Amino acid sequence: MKITKKEASIPIFANMTRWENYIIAAEKIITGYNGSLPLHHYLKTFFKAHPHMGSRDRKRVQQLVYHFFRLGNWQQNLPLKERILLGTFLCEQGPDELLTFFKPEWDVTASFEDKLAALGLQWSVFPFAKHLSAGIDAEQFTRSFLQQPKLFLRARPGKLAAILRLLEGNYVYEQIGANTIALPNGTKTELIIPDKSWYEVQDLSSQETGLRFHPKAGEHWWDCCAASGGKSILLHDLQPAIHLFASDVRASILENLRKRFAEAGLKNYSSKVLDLTSPALRASMPRTQFSGIILDAPCSGSGTWGRTPESITFFKEAQISEYAALQKQIARNVVPFLAPGGTLIYITCSVFREENEEAVAFLEQVCGLKIEESGIVSGYQRNADTMFVAVARREG
Image (cartoon, rainbow, N blue to C red; front, side):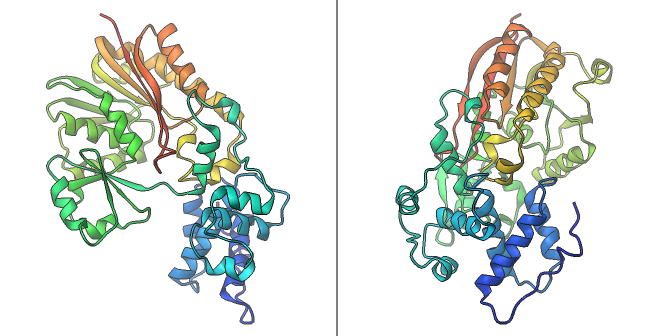
C-alpha cells in the first residue's frame, strides 16, 4: 500500500491551531488507510512523506489515529472528526489539551462508565462476540481495546538482577513472577539495557504458555510455526541441552529468527523453511519423531487486537473458519511426527472458539491425542495479550 500524491499533500494552515491541524492529519491517514498492511507500517510511510511534521506532531497524530481505530465500527454514523474525538475521550484518562480545545465540557478524568453516561451511549464494539471462547468476559475484553497493552520483557537466565539495577530509580516498571518485567508501551529498551542477550521482548501471556514446556536434556523438540523464535528461545532457556529444530513457511521470517537467535547467543539448533500443509512434508523433514512439538498455529490474532486495533475494523467473520481449517490441516500433518509418549503444545493468540476449543476437539477425536490441559491464558485484565494453550500427549 503506497501513499498517493494526494495523500502526501496535507496543508498546514497558519491560521489554525496545532490541534486543528492534528485532526486534519489524522483524518487524512484514516481515509487513506485500507487495512492491507499493518497500521504502524502505513504510519511510518505516511510520516516519511511528511518530513515537515516534528516528532511531537507525529506522536500526537498517531495517538489520534489509534484512538479512532480502537472504536472498531462502533458509532460509525458519527462524522470522522467526532469519532476521532470520541475515541480520544474514551482512551485518555488524564487532562488532554486537544480535548479541552474541542470539547471543554467533557471530563476526561471521569470513569469509563461516567463518560458513556455523560454522552448517553452504550458500549458495544466487538462484532464477533458469538465466537468467543468459554470464560472470556466479552465486555471486559472489548474494553481492553481502549488501552495499549504493556511492553513485557523476559529476563534471560541469571540476568534479572542486573536488569533491575538498570531500571531501579530511573524507570517505571513492575516485576511479575520470577522473570517477567512490565514496562510502559513504547519504552526504548535498547537504550536502557545495552546487552540484547540479557532479555527477550515477549508478552506476558506468551511467556506463560512456556509453563507447559517440560523439555528434558537430549530430547528432540520441533517448533513448527516458529516465526521469529520467541518460544524457541524460551524452550532453550528452560533446557539448553535439547536438540531444537525450528521451521516456518516464510524464508524472511526464518532469517529474522536466525538474527534473533544470534543476539540471544543461541547456536545449538537447526532450521528450515517448511510448508506444513504440503503432502510432501515427510520427505522434507530432518527426522521422523520428536519428543515435543510446539504448534503456535497461524491464527486470527484476535487476542492481540489491543496492539493492532485496526484489525477490529478490517477483520472479516469468514476468516475465522478459514484459519480454523488451516489449523486443522497443519495439525493433521504435524501430529504423525510426535513420538509415542511425546507432548504437543497447541497455542494460538486467538479468542475464538473455532480456533481454540474446536481445534482441541480435533486433536483428540481425529488426531488421536490425549488432552491433558486446555484453556484461555487471559491477558485482557492484565494489560497483556490473551492466548489459548492446550497440552496434548500421544499415548505410547
